Amino acid sequence: KNEVEQSPQNLTAQEGEFITINCSYSVGISALHWLQQHPGGGIVSLFMLSSGKKKHGRLIATINIQEKHSSLHITASHPRDSAVYICAVRPGNQFYFGTGTSLTVIP
Amino acid sequence: EPEVTQTPSHQVTQMGQEVILRCVPISNHLYFYWYRQILGQKVEFLVSFYNNEISEKSEIFDDQFSVERPDGSNFTLKIRSTKLEDSAMYFCASGGPNQPQHFGDGTRLSIL
Image (cartoon, rainbow over all chains, first blue to last red):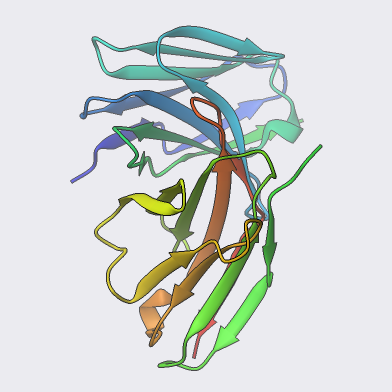
């Protein structure tokens, strides 16, 4: 069973495009994380949120707890944004991860 | 900026042997985690550790696995009697309460 579903699985965009990655989950959570995994494998935490909206530079993350849904937006996308974006949810001290969205931004 | 460091970056071990993966979390962090990612698959939670004890573990984290904080700075994952299917990238992470986690660069474990 998949507690976390992400869409799309793969996404190709032209530089400058606005990008949205979606995450739906089926369990009650205390927090949701958005992570970025670089081609070399390293993982960077982008956001941790439990309600509302957060913004960092060109990245915006939103969450709707009632609908069990979160979105990650990238404005003015750039080739350096190319990576796998992973949604992870935290019920208690356990973590469930999505399979990731592979984003390629073409110059 | 402080980093989580993991050693070794790549470990090759014969099936049946024991391995110890090492992590140095960020010094003022209180929560520590191990994850694994089998090649081509999603990241999987193994265990969380707080206040010198396991606070949560997944179904994957069976008796073959153990964690330890031997000296107040290192955080280790021990895998006994390794199997071929233990081959994966293992990530350590640390964090404060209600804060994002900081990940190490991972240890690639190859079981032959």
